[in-house]
Length: 348
Image (cartoon, rainbow, N blue to C red; front, side, top):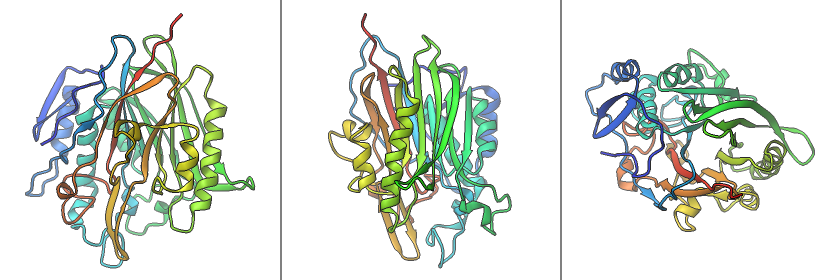
C-alpha cells in the first residue's frame, strides 16, 4: 500500500476513488474510466511502496507544485522472449492493457502539477485520459524512433517526449524544441523539448524541459556533447526571471560526463533531498545479456527561485520483486521520480 506524501500540490477535484489504499482524485467520468480500465487478470495491481525524503517545511508564502519525471517505456519496445528485452517478465505484464492502467494509476495517485514523460508512443491515450483530470499536454516525437520499425507493435507509432501541465496551476505560453547537436554541429538523435508556462496566480514564468539522451555503452561522448547543447538550449529559452525544471532520462549513471556537465549549470533535486546521495536505481530489468540496474533519470532545477521540499525515494530492492521491471506493481522498466518544489517569492 502506498499513499501520497504529506505535502501536496494545490490541485483539487470533486470526486475520488480509493484503490489499493490510495485515493485518486478527479472528475466522476474519469474515475469511472479508470475503474473500467483495470486489467482482467486474476491478480491484484497495486503500486510499489515508497516514501518521501527531505520533507522540508514549506514557507507560508510561495506556491508549492509537484513535478513527475518518468520514462514510461514505449509499447513498441516491449517485445519479450528469451532472446529479447524483458526476457523474464511475464508477457501479461507487458501488454498495453496492463501497463496503461498502472501508469495512469500512478500518475493520478500523486496528482503532479507537471508530468514529464519519455518513450511516450501512446500520447493520444494519455492526452484524452489526462484531460478528464484537468491536464493539457504537448508531444514531440523522437528523431529516428526505433518504435516505427517494431513488427510486433500493430500501431507502430514513434515514441517521443511529452509534457503535461494542470490547467488550474499553469497557462501555456509557447512550445519550443530542437534536435540537439554535437560539438561538430551535427544533429544527434536526441531531442530537447520545452514548454514555457506561466503560473495562473501571477503569470510568473516557468520553463519545463524534457530530454532523453542516447543510450548504449559506446555513446558516452555523444551524450556529453548533447548535454552541452541541452544547457545551451535552456539558456537560450529561459529569461532572467524564469524558473527552470528539467526532467531527463540521461541513459547514464551520475558518474559520467553528461551528468557532470549538467550539474555545473543546474541543481539535482534528488541529490538535495537525499542529502548528496542519488537514488539506488531508476531503471531495473533483465536483458538477454544480463541484469541491468542503473540510475539514469534526474530532475534538475535552477535554485535562484526554487527550493526543494521533498522527493519520492525509490522502492526497496525486495519490493521490486524477482522479475524486476515492468511488473504488476509498475507499468514501466523505469521508476517515476516525483519532487515537490516551492517558489522563493521575490522581495521588493
